[in-house]
Length: 293
Length: 293
Image 1 (cartoon, rainbow over the protein chains, first blue to last red):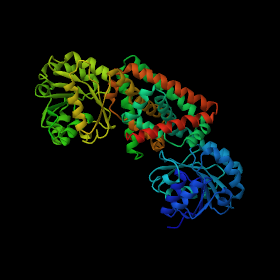
Image 2 (image 1 turned 60 degrees about the vertical axis):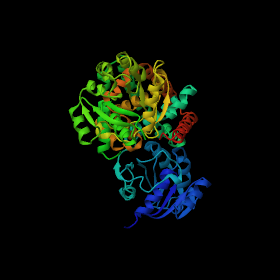
Image 3 (image 1 turned 135 degrees about the vertical axis):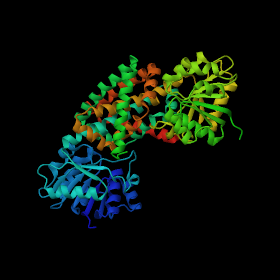
Image 4 (image 1 turned 180 degrees about the vertical axis):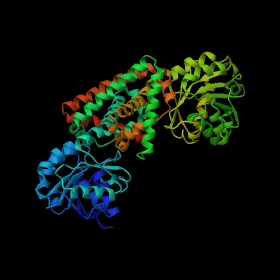
C-alpha cells in the first residue's frame, strides 16, 4: 500500500510518540520517520531500538524536512515548540498533535503555523500508564478511536490526510469540535485520573501502619486506581490546567453524586445503593459491548 | 498431602464460593466439598461443572455433615443463615466466612454458633468484577492475602485450621482485629468501589449525545472505573451498609483531598499538581513491587 505520508516528524518520543513511530512503520503509513526529542537519553533509546530513520534534537530541523509534523510532547511545551516549528513548515505541510485537550492545542499552535501550511489537531484515545520511548508499541491504537478536530478554515484534504494516517495505524476515526472533545474527555478521562490520583494520595497519608497495609491489600480495588494514577505527572498537570473549565464542571457534577451515595449509606438506604450500583453495572456492559475494554 | 479439612461446606456459590471449591479441590485442601446455594440455576451450574461432591439447597443439611462451614453469600444473608447453620454445626466444627466487613460478620454470626463449635471470620482479598459459579477459578487466591480475624476466645487450633486452609489454596495469610480490618478495607476497597460506581453514574447522567461518547471513548481511563463498577450490586450494597462508619470516615478524608486538587486546578497551581501526581505514582510502584498488581 502507498504511504499516507512521505516524511513524518514526531516531536516528543514518549509512549505515544514512539507508538506512532512503530505503528506508522509497521503499517507503512509513512515512508520515512524523523524522531525529535530534547532528551539525550530518549534519543539514545530511539537509536538503540531503531525507531526512526533520522534522530534530531532541534524541532526546527525536523519541521524543515517533514510533510507531517506531529507534536507528542506534554501540552505545556506546545507554544514554545509551535514558535520554533510553525515558521519552518514546508508549504502544504500539516502540523498535528496528539494532546488530550483540543481547545488549548488550537490556542497554542494555530497562531504560529505559517501561511500555506495547515493545522489539524488530533487526539488518539489510547494509552497505558507507562512512559518513555521504550514503552510504546505498534498495536496501541488498534481499534481505538482517534478524534480529529479540524477548524472551519482547514482544507478538507489536510484533515483527510490525518484521518487516513490514523486509520492506517489501526484507529477508528471520529471528528468533532475542540469544545465538544474537551467536555467528553473531561468526564471519560480527566476527572477519573484526578480521582485516581487523589484516592491514592489519601491512602498514602494514612497513619503509617495503615499505609503499608494499603499496598499489601491493594488487590481489593485499590490497585485499579493506582494503575491509572501511575500516568505521567507532567503530562497530566498540563491536561488539568488546559482543560480547567470542563474538568471543574464535571467534578462539580461528580460531587453531587458522591453526596447522594454518602447520604444513602448514612441513612441505611440499601435500595438506593443497589439501584445505583445496578445502573453502573449496565454501563460497564456497554463498554464491553463497544469493544473498548 | 493430607487434606486440611475433611468435609468443607460452602454456602453461597458465587465467584468466591466457587473459586474456593475449585482451589480446595485442586490443592487437596478438602477431602469432600458440599455446595449449598438457594438458587436452582446456580445448583444446576454447579452440577454441570462438577464443582462439588454433593449439592444441597438447605444450609442446615450442609452444616450437619461439615467440618468447616464457609459462608460465601452477600452479607445481608449472614444473620439468617447463621440462625439456621449455627445450631446444626458438629461438635468441634468451624464456621467461617469470606465477607468484606469483619465487625459485622462477628455481630451477625457469633451469637448463633453452638457451644463446642468455633467461629473464625476470614476475608480473602481477591476478586474480579464477574459474578456467579461459572466465573470462579482455582487460581483466584494465588499470592493474594487472606485476612483472618479470630476472636480472643477462639481456640488456637481453630484459627490455625482456617489459616492452613487458605495457605493450601495459595494465599498468604495475615491476622488482625475486625476493627482494623474494616478500616484498611474501607480505604483500599470500599471507597474506591463507591467512587467508581459514582463516576460511572455521573457519566451516564450526561446529555444523551455525551453519554454515547462516554462509552465510545472509555479507553481513556474511564473503563478502569467501569471494571470496578461492574461488581455485584447486592454484595456491595451490603458492604457499604455493614462498614458505614469506616467508609464515611475515609470518604471524608478523600473529600478534603479532592478539594485540594480542585483548588490547585482553579488557581493554575501546576507545581502542586505535579507534586501530588508524582507522589501517587510512587505508590503505584510500591503496589507493583509488592506483587499485588
